[in-house]
Length: 209
Length: 209
DNA sequence: ACCTGAACACCGTTCAAGT
DNA sequence: ACCTGAACACCGTTCAAGT
Image 1 (cartoon, each protein chain N blue to C red):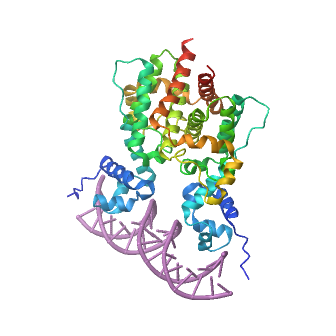
Image 2: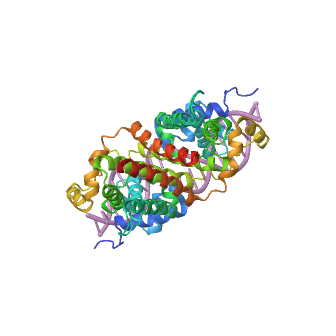
Image 3: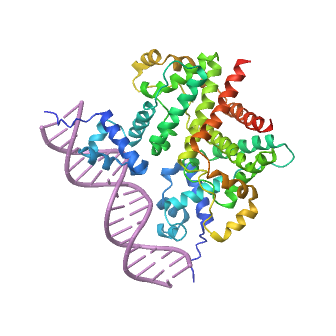
């Protein structure tokens, strides 16, 4: 008689995603995950060759959560909605960012949003060879924005450890001192749209002429 | 008499960067680093409160390596050169990418390239408030591109574990099947320029009108 | 085929002690 | 102030064994 633990790849990866959301990549250990699933650690290795394979599976689950835009809009609007959906998923699972930059989409479910993106670019009349370049630029911008947002790259003005040197920084880096105050007030989603429209306009105009 | 180990923050972080380049973030352990520096593990804790502080210091070293463009060119060309320099550093230290997306520039040396970027945008006649937005979009694109390049996001056509399902993928994801073959042939630097020009044109034209 | 427990070779960090 | 060694509480993974 089998042990009837109800274990399978999907169930393990789902529980791992919950743990990732709560504790981050470093907090997601095989041992804690096994405890949470009420099995021995080594039971997990019947489904994943190692921790890397598990993290990959978690990344695929995240990609699969990207909401595909419904039909009825032009290609440009489809792309805009799709990139917003990508950004939204990364905000739902901010701790998954290190995984997303390590494991590309691979499963059918994970590739669904990529397919939708290619389709929209092709519908705009772009050749397959050019569609690859277009989508790559869009993906780079979306992933980069999410990365910058989630890590708070521009969140606060630079603060050196030594508080006495704040004045020194202002003297050595006048432009940083002048511009930094405005970074704090930016609205993330509006900024995302700002750059996204730039890239979309550039891409689609270039191929319409 | 002090132990004359020649230890200091900078020397430790420099050696850590070498180890990061060779073995990646996971391979950069406090214990191995101490052995490489010929001191006990705990000696490192006199200079860094924990491993995170060390990784932060390594990230600052990487930022400080960004080559600033010389004078003599217009703001647009300066920005183009600067973003290429950022990309170049991330290619010199590809394993530093997880650090760069975790620890923003903070020291004076690390902020030098950010200052140069702001200065160029300001020189283009953009207001400080708008300069913050412009630079943010540029940084997002550059970091995202480096991320996509280094992780090989678009390097190979998607290959599911189950080879029998390759045909199934082609059926379920027709646009992926059509576009993917063209991704392999792309030249990374040319693609970077492709999108960078798009963003630069959009940003600078918007503010010139 | 799936699951277990013990063991191995690692980690980061705390603590008490040395100079 | 700087450095050490021992100890603690963790890791991922191998192995031999169980059903």
